[in-house]
Length: 388
Image (cartoon, rainbow, N blue to C red; front, side, top):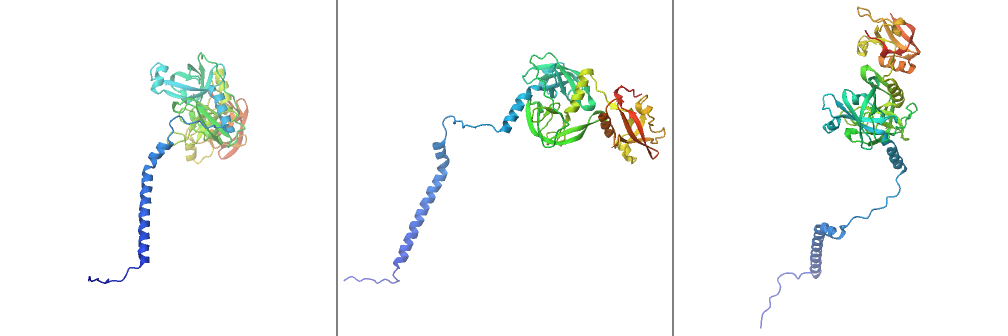
């Protein structure tokens, strides 16, 4: 009869066994799911490419109407762009052919068609020192041009297009006297040679002063944040009606590119100066016929005003009795006011005289030997005075 060996340890609890079996099953299920998820993750890009790739052209989604602001800007560009030209200026040091030299990166800027006779307004610095000039119209036609007149004090020049084939569309003229900070502004030009470029912004500030040639300053300058870059010079600054309100001329930038601070010569000044240049080729310069001391020198002497160094022969200032500095350098007359307006610098005096106008009298407040007096002086065209 066989012998049985009795168990030496305790009998396992059936509940523990069942619990362990359940845990084992859950682990196996979790591992299976993790493997499935990993497989799906790896296969997802391939499955998406297989199921969702478009084998043909996409169907165009209907856009609907443009926003009113978009429509008005598009219409403005269509209406005004034919009045904007790309101005080319070839230096006398370059090859004779302007058409050939275009590929060599000649000096260029922008301009506006002023009238149907083919006059174009641009900046003087765009064409300064050029031996040959030309302009490309919005149609692509290239036309040679010649200078009618320049006004360096205002950085303006008038060109004449020679025998354009296409009909010309003069730009609409607005006013700069009623502009308001915050109103929309649009610029069209050829920044970096990229013709017919439109940028938008606002009128950022008014009544800025912009230095130009011969220590002259343009008053009433418009500041804008519409992007203006090299090549925009001479192009139009427009209001929302598409009217010319200024001629883009300068920027403030550390890099030479647009920094959102651009300046435009006000159209009221452009209108007056362009008319004179077209009619006579010159622009009268309001003045009284004095040579003033440098502002830094006046500041060094602690003088606030315009120090008269000398008067021009037979000038209104000389006839009114204004006296320049003595041979020993002693200051005699210092102009501190004009028609009740304070004068601190020559640019202040030039702006005041420009507002008064040639042929009118100005009451100057003058200090001599510490005593103030009033002197009546007639404003004249000092470009006709001899400086000898």
